[in-house]
Length: 172
Ligand SMILES: CC(C)(COP(=O)(O)OP(=O)(O)OC[C@H]1O[C@@H](n2cnc3c(N)ncnc32)[C@H](O)[C@@H]1OP(=O)(O)O)[C@@H](O)C(=O)NCCC(=O)NCCS
Image 1: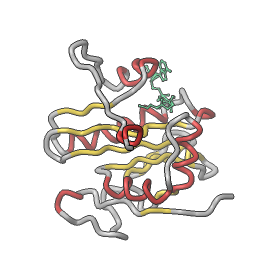
Image 2: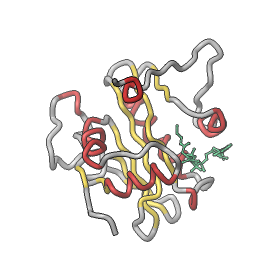
Image 3: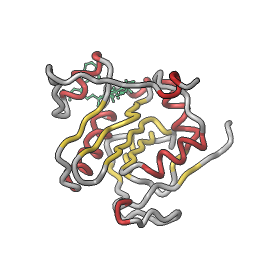
Image 4: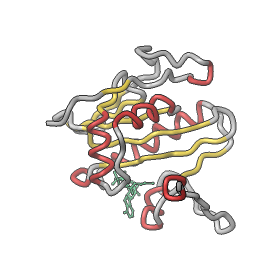
């Protein structure tokens, strides 16, 4: 067993400056998709579980401390646990709270993929976007995930292409 590291989520309204550690979000909600517990902005997030999950699905490795900061600064965080309380799903929204939102780190454990967990995560994050009345929400993804996001209403636009600069790679 790895060390237990947890982080408390930001207030559900970080734009008001109420980003108080230990504040219990009033928007914490759970539902009971059979065998899974889906939570938005849980009071605590299992950082080792998140880090392991992201690595298992092939995303870049995370430092626990950096991920704690990233989660705190996120607008909305969704976690999914199975009936053995193992973290099997994760995703987060980063937004300016007015115009734009971006989904990041959407991940579902390979053992439970194709059972609706990913869609449930995206649905929670989109509900937050709608409640904030954002103008647009976007994301970066590999082409093979196209159908997954299309099933939640996203569209790939021919006239928009992702451009990125990997700042860690370009550091000298
Ligand atoms: C992409 C990912 C999050 C999907 O999660 P999931 O729980 O398996 O997806 P769901 O079961 O909720 O699927 C929702 C819909 O997408 C479809 N879908 C899911 N994965 C798909 C795939 N690889 N190809 C085609 N369709 C797919 C499902 O058939 C379903 O369609 P429906 O709503 O018409 O029934 C998951 O496969 C994953 O973690 N992949 C590795 C990490 C990754 O690439 N994350 C995305 C980073 S942007």
